[in-house]
Length: 460
Ligand code: MN
Ligand code: MN
Image 1 (cartoon, protein in one colour):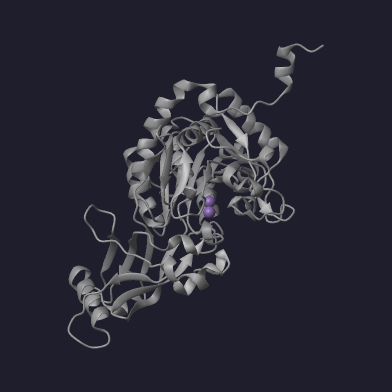
Image 2 (cartoon, helix red, strand yellow):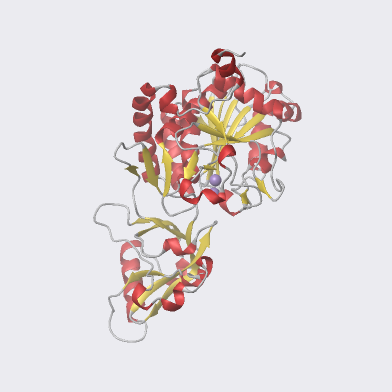
C-alpha cells in the first residue's frame, strides 16, 4: 500500500494562491494599488509609453545611445515612435550567454475614429468609428466613453487629447435601441445585432445658428476654440474612444479588479516592476512593451517590425558580441493574458486544462486554433526551465488553454519572437471577460506575475 505522503508526491496539486499562503493577501493588494494607478493613467499605447518612460527614468534608466559602450548594471531604454518601448538592464554575462526577455503589449481593443469622422443627423452630432481589435460590438453601446489621441494641426502644432477621464468632464456615448421596440433586433444573431457601421459616437447636440449642419458646426467651433483644430486636421488625427470608467475593486473582499485594457496592461505593469527591481543580473534582461498586437502585430510599432531585432542587435554589437549567437541562446516570456475558466460558460472550456482565477501565473505551451495552427508551441526544455525557476522562488503557477479543442483560439506575439530564433513561451495573468470594455483579473495573479518575472530576470 502507498502512504498518504507517497500519494501526495505523485499527484499534481493545483493550488489557490491564498490557500498556499494566506499572508500573500497584503502584498498582493498593496501591489495592485500601483497597478490601478497605471491603468487609469495609461489607456492607450502612447499613454502607456509615457508612463513607462517616466517611471523608468525615476528608476535609473536613460535613453539608449549605441555610441556609448554599455557595462554591466547599465539601465537603458529606446522608444519606438511614441507607441512602443524597449528597456534593458545590462547583465554581467557576455551577450553570447543569451538575453532574458519579457514582451507584453500595451494596445487594447477600442473604437478608433475614422479619418472623416464628424457628421450630423437628426440634430445630433456624431463620430464615425472603425473598431480596433476583436470586440463584441454589442458591448460598446450605452457606455460612457472617453476620447484619447493625437491631432497634428495644419498650422504645425500637436494636440494631445484626453477628454472624459477627469472628474466633471463630459463623456461620449453610443446609443442602443430601447427593448420596447427591439423586436427585430432581438431576432438577430448576437454577432449581427450591432453592426460596425452602427457604432457611431454621440458628441454633441447644441446648434450654432441655423442650417443642416448647425450642430456639427457648433462642435467644430468648440474644438477650434479649445484645441485650435479644424475638420481638415481630423483627417490626419489618431483619435480613439475607450471606456471612461476607472479601475475598481470587485467583490465584498475586493480581491479582483475590473478595468478597461487589462489585456495586456495586466502583464505590461508587472513586466516593468520586475525589471525595475532587477539590479545586477547575470544575463542582460529586456522588457518590450509592444503596440499593434491586437491587430496582428503588423505596423512599424508592432513586433513584426525590425525595431526589436535592431535594438537587441545593437546591444550585442555595443559589447562586441555576435548577435546570432546571442539570439539563439536567449529566451523570452511572451507575457500576455490567458482566458480564465468561466463557470457560467463552462461549455466553452475543458475544465481540467483551464487556468483559474487566484491560481497564479498561467503558462500556455501553445495557443492557436484548429490543431494548434498559428501557435509557436514552446518546448519541454523551456517549460522545464520556467517550472524550475517558479519552484525555486515560490511562484504559484498553473497551465492554461484557450477553451476546449476546436472552440476557437487566439494568437500572441510568441510567433514574432520565434521568428528571431529566440525560444518563447506564453506566460500571463488569467482574466475573465477578455476583450470586453471592462475586464476582470484577480489581484493574487497579478502580484504573482510580478514575482514570476522578477525571478526569471534574477535567475543565474
Ligand atoms: Mn493580449
Ligand atoms: Mn487581446
